[in-house]
Image (cartoon, rainbow, N blue to C red; front, top):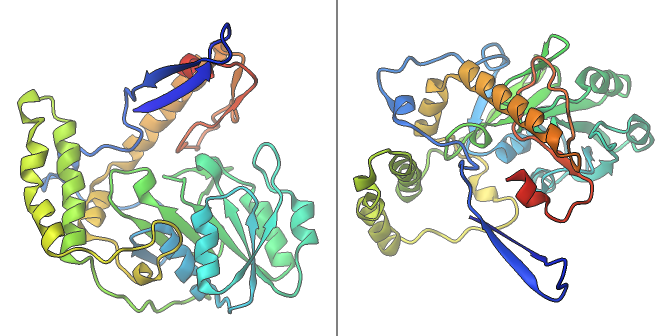
Length: 339
């Protein structure tokens, strides 16, 4: 549920509350078909079918080890867009590198002048983010990096699959980072792809999830399957089915991990086998088509709302949005309008 409040026009000292319930889940939901053993294990799309790929629980783990692959040393600087997810910066700082921010424009494209102005002897790499699944001018960024003898990191955490001008996202930069759990019904799932054949990395794998953490993964899947079931009689089953998990938490409490910041204790952990199985079972081309169809539907619907404008009003061929960002121009009750 989402709750919004705003003052009434006629009584500015009063507050009007409206409970806004999500009609569609904000996260990908799992269904039985993707867990079926009879489902065909699929080959992942490029670049995973041709480049060395390493599976981690989270995309930030992939960034951390990606810096190792690039040979970044403590004290080196990474240029990062000034609009970003905090976890990106936290993983770089936890590695021991420094962060310097460069400006981006209103359309989320990089300010190339600002990037060049901030390149000095300490800078080792530039990080580019394909915001919301919409591509950055990655070829131009690569040319800039090559001219200054820098590495390029392609952050594809918002990318399911896609291309621009015939080039597949995630295949251009020296390394690419993906975060599948944002786009697919996975508890965990991040990947590091090494595109530069001159790079190599040996990861000191820590192993797999501990039993209680693994139980948490199965708990999420059970709840999602029950919530998505059309059979009303089983709606009350989650508490009963999750009773063993609750007992296990009491008997074997997990070590408290930081609620914010990068957790170094998980940096060498492998992606869970179950999430990897779901990933290989997912029909990514079909999901790609549905996401594009949904985005086109929403862009069309927003034409009747002049105060709400899509940041990218034209969904070019090859683009698969993660989310549809919009710009709000005034309007007190745009939340209700969006509903």
